[in-house]
Length: 115
Image 1 (cartoon, one colour):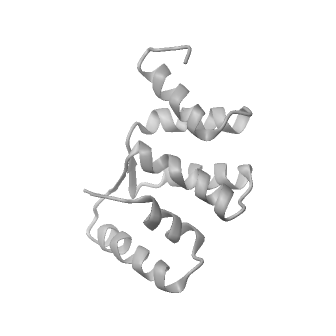
Image 2 (cartoon, one colour):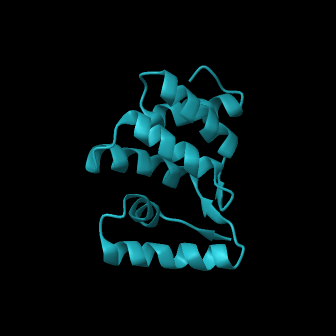
């Protein structure tokens, strides 16, 4: 199973540069064609939220929708996916930052709460 880095994931999502998009699509396409699942570590799952919001001006609801679609993709396997899904729900409903929601969800999953 191959893992995706934030740069590849963000380029694939924003499609702002044709050359970089082509480079991002190559490993994704190869893995999908070979029936491989692409692994996303928790640390990588945190970064797109910030990059999309701060660097590309996406609104919170747009980011929530994108992250939700990524989490439901069968081609992607997220580390601690259940906690990330919980974190996304918290993020949608709360004023806390997404990373704080991830930390809270991971702590709750480990039985260590409140954070």
